[in-house]
Image (tube, rainbow, N blue to C red):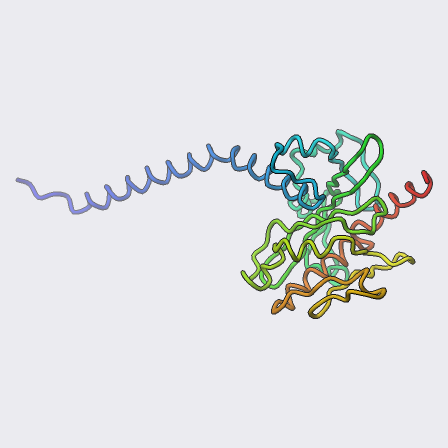
Length: 261
């Protein structure tokens, strides 16, 4: 019997690897629509958590019915016309890195360590008829190990926090990872971001927040053993509610509320 080709085992492994790679690639492509649908559902859940509207007895679509998704131009803080950007497909984090829809941030501006900022942002309006009851804003910024993503819900005064939900991060479990602890997130409720003069007053304590006096209106508990994560949360809030983030939009909304009142 002729000797077997010594390369035959190598070819067999190569063919097996190719077949397995094709199966994995096919599965990834085939599952992508399902993964995207699940991602959208998960984001909607966190928007609902932030707004205090999550109810396990209802479907996501039922709970989301009073929420209208709009797009704003961060500067000058105005809504853009419906249809100019498809809210279902717009990826604003990706847009930040795209020419024409994003811009680089200068170092002194970039306290949240984003590097690039998108031109347009999604916003979520909780409406009762024509009246806006809450506005939910997407924020992000660097913590100790990762970029942290969250939704912050504001009352109609555009300063009082009605809820927050951190939905993605890579911080240390049990330390910085406590940003997703519901008890800590609940402690944000009813805190104010701005002083009466419009300055950012929200603050994170080194330990427990004040429970009385003026500071109690603005102070949130720091995360024990996670000083850098807490600092990252503080920085992302300062950025997104400052002049380069949502402050122009908040000023616009506040002016409309005052004129209607």
